Length: 573
Ligand SMILES: [Zn+2]
Image: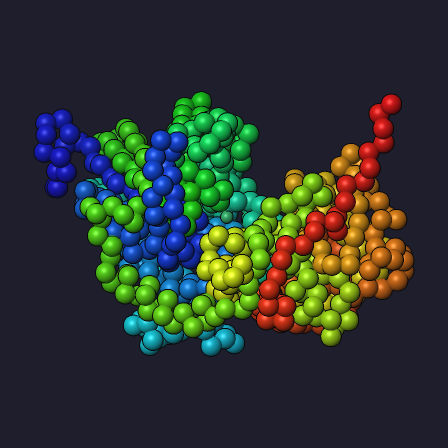
């Protein structure tokens, strides 16, 4: 028998090191900096080569170790990974030694079949940017993940079985530890409905607790949960510390879940919110258990030490701390093999990513006005309208959640007052590679659609679907205007007489050609009115429409935020 720690009294314990990440989102390379707390310096962070260096450094401290992820490894990725269908992320994560990952909502961005391909390998159908192993020094066809995806609460409705195993049991010095992987129950709201047809997403806590009972019956006493759902620290001012827990996650989704968990769950590794925290939250027995999250994009990782009693097989202590993946740390050696692979993908992507598409004269960002519109939302909608005029489009709508970055003037090369914009930057902003779709809606349907943006309104929802708990305000193209009243009743916030196309009030039965992404056309963001669209015509990819807009206009300036207005409030006197 291997005695891990020779000191008297410690032979009956085994220590396990867990290295955890979450929300990596294909960020193979990094140009970001990060502050770990109010007193900490700004340091360059991330990059999978340095992340791997940190993982190796931590693993070397304990032969009993495991590298895990709490979901969203892939999806909404920068071009270097996303253009190649995230095959590079899976390949580098294999080399980094990742063993287990919960699925996150973004794992479903391209649908169930594509996620199964990520696990088991093969090529993406109908695109040349797949199985490029010969150019980057990897196997052809793409070999898939060596780590195991877990999906305890994602069921195939036909078979009643989960699409991946619910849990994985690892044994350390004779002590079994179970890892359960779950994604947020609300995953269907955030992904293209067509991609998850036939899947059912069950409740997080109820799924975990039912599994804990099964595991206990098998004699397993130590359970770790990898969950793609999270919370956030309360920020009173400035930068929050990555290892603190301001506000104790009160009122956040993960708190509600942990409050319901069986006492056998000893550690919760969370994600989804891209936040950093190390917390202790009460479970259903009132006992406080550690709940961690390591921000996103490989900027942090969580270093966790778990001690288990070899006789009782129960966890006796857990310590956890978030560590910044600091590219300037000379004690860490970037993994050369992973760097080589990353660099070869970057070289493959470079001619596409670095192509200058046009320029901007000032910041064009997602920051919204009181009416919830943004200059970048305008730009994307305008580009989509322009790209589909041939299909008769008079208005384009784009979902705010699909805009994944900003065009900051200061972050690129400027020349004579004009800052150049590359295709790679546009890909970061529009990473989902969705086709544009032009459909016909009536004036009445447009009104219904606008009401459905506001929380609680379920005008034409399929039976059993719960309306969203937050507003989902669409960004609109030039020529489309309306006003809404924040104090208006549910499903009665939009002033019907204010909805105009090119200055004319929409007629209830008049038909309008409307352009959206394939995500919205399928009822994404629970805007089901789009699914009633007629005379569907498919168009270009969203990112290409945006690039074409730059190519045509060359220099782009932020628009005025005057398309969505707040209705005048009645005077309280
Ligand atoms: Zn997520």
